Length: 219
Image 1 (cartoon, rainbow, N blue to C red):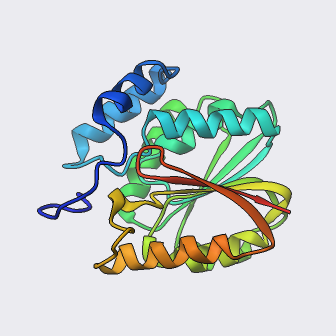
Image 2: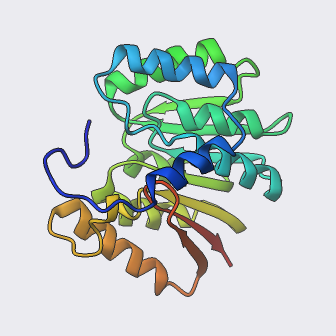
């Protein structure tokens, strides 16, 4: 799926700088590279993959924070789930939720092939319904799902996040269209970003990495 086919976008980072930064970033494991190849073979577009810079940032946050229990909202074909699972310590677990049937099947196949330590649990369903059912709290939550539902996901997720835990949200700049939002998703993301900035229960930093990523820490 292409986000803005035929529509003008803002280039967030100079392409040469972004390419250089990517070259200077630790590369993906062979298993993750195989997952990308498999996804590309089976789908017309794979631009919803988080990408190596975001993936490595997630891995770094897990290692620095010592996270052992991770929740992902929006699996797609399993790229970011596998990246994060690779960073989890022994005994760590990652729960990921996906409602699209095709993506469920692709992710399930990928986890069967590449999740060698069986750290990933795939829940098939709507995260708006599934997250409230989950027991316990999580050390880190990664949100990368339906942009129109970000506010609801956030509301449900914050109660499942441990004190001092991290909530990482992808695509918060939406190719720069949040600056002068015209379409529905850009307007929803702009409203979401402003709500987070005004929420005194958390502290956050919005980074212009790839398509924009916000790191939120629950106080």
